[in-house]
Amino acid sequence: MSIAFIDLAAQQARIKDKIDARIQAVLAHGAYILGPEVTELEEKLSVFSGAKHAITCANGTDALLMALMALGIEEGDAVFIPAFTFVATAEVVPFVRATPVMVDVTPDTFNIDVASLERAVEFAKSQGLRPRVVIAVDLFGLPADYPAISAIAKKHDLTIIGDSAQSFGGSIEGQRTGSFGTITTTSFFPAKPLGCYGDGGAMFTNDDALADLLRSLRFHGKGHEKYDNVRIGNNSRLDTIQAAVLLEKLAIYEEEIFLRNKVAARYSSMISQRWQKPIVPEGYGSVWAQYTLVAKNAQAREDIIAKLRGQGIPTNVYYPRPLHQQTAFDGCMTDPEALGTSERLATTVFSLPMHPYLSEADQNRIIEALA
Ligand SMILES: *Cc1c(COP(=O)(O)O)cnc(C)c1O
Image (cartoon, rainbow, N blue to C red; front, side, top):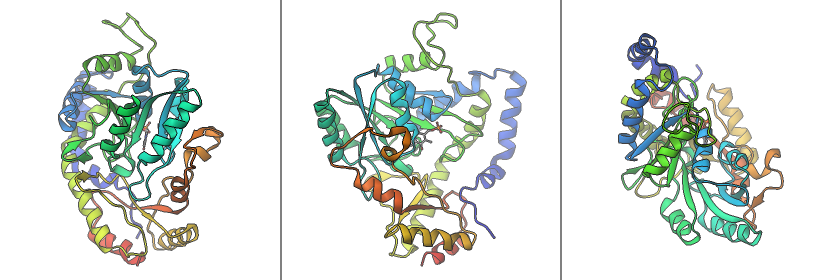
């Protein structure tokens, strides 16, 4: 019997009646764009995250792009991003004609290494760029080291964007992702911890003026009314039907975060020591978008992936190539001391099945196969 990597069907079976009713309500009122469910969702996302404003949009990539647009990032500006992340974090930077500068991550949290960030900032300055923004990614569900990143941001006058596409609901000292940066973004892609049935995303901020700007940017740069266009914007709204789905998923999300943590805790206590297991620093809360192990070397990874596959256990490699080694970013600017950890992780990490409904029996099979 094969195990699911992410079991969206189990979740759907649990709340299908409610999702069906929500979708029927949208079909009945017919407000498919920015309907009442979108407003209701934004209010609930704001309460859940603790951020003053939650502004939904079409996907997590647009959320990052509009964050850069709202901050006025332009040609000659340097935007610092970790090399070990999904490409969306980086690709939005050239979109606004700014320069992405890749920094390394730490070997245990997989998030930004602040020493590398600081070297990269000095290097960008020496190359005549203006250091403006750091996009801190909360990889695999664990918030980045925002206290340390904030200290460096303050020193160099950088604005922080939190890319919380994988970590919505993650926390530091009880404070949830949504207000660690000036703007925080997330994604509701189906496979994310909180996902809809298509593409979706959101932006969070405590700043009233930025919130107004982001609302304008997602709607063709509108002013006070629809056909008043005061800036160059975008068409990037969350469909009302997706908001309806998300409302029912958000209602059980708190419990799902608890269940994900239960699965992760069991993995961490029972998996063989031969694999490097993920850590959660004191005071941090992860939502476990992925449960990711590190093998001793590339061969050990290939061997275990093949063995698991043979037993009907799926794995995935996030990410097999760091961004500075991607064709699209050929010759991009990086921390001058190289990105050794990102490169090593790309050849050794692998992620296990992880979702709130993973049974103990299935988990035991995975744990035994790794022994
Ligand atoms: C998924 C993801 C995004 C992009 O989200 P989309 O909704 O797919 O556009 C951005 N950053 C990270 C780290 C992601 O994992």
